[in-house]
Length: 251
Image (cartoon, rainbow, N blue to C red):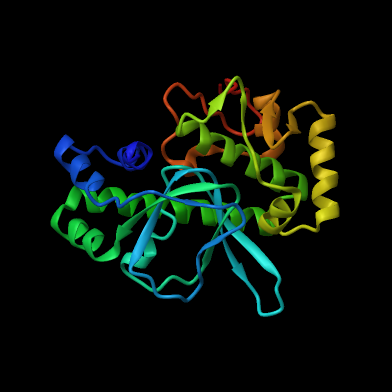
């Protein structure tokens, strides 16, 4: 149950077996949450934080008139609302699919982080990586073309799923709809559809049956102007190239 959370933390700093066991002891009973459920509510106080054990979810902000901006896509192993242990949460998290989620007492988490500097640093580094992702999205929204924004996001989600061993034969589960993509990259649904059609036509990806298939990793990297350095912990064996250079296709 805690394996992917531990893998996520260890990717950002070594933990001793006893420290891993201490993190595992925090997790409560796993609960199943249906798709399209708002799991974390903006501004609502909660006694627990949440770990995504299985499934996919997204973080978002919604304006008073109902317009939504997606600001992060979550994969298994993510803390959905680590901020809740220390500050009020100022965003919502909704499920993309049926998810399995484990609660963590915010009080116990704060106590463990205070008692164990290495565990604290591991959680801190996951927050720093989230901040790096947010900066990359901001650069994309402000400076990348629509084509590059969508391709960049596909690269990012694909690599993050691969790190959790959720990519096989160059394909992964991809429940992110066209509307979700549009809300993440700041485009209309129509414009997003055109970009996806262009990426399909170029032969770099296929999208079918809620699945992403990468046919040409180097081509997708080039289309997205993608440099994975901001993710800070590429999966073992992954050859990450600068935009425009060839890369070993992930599997």
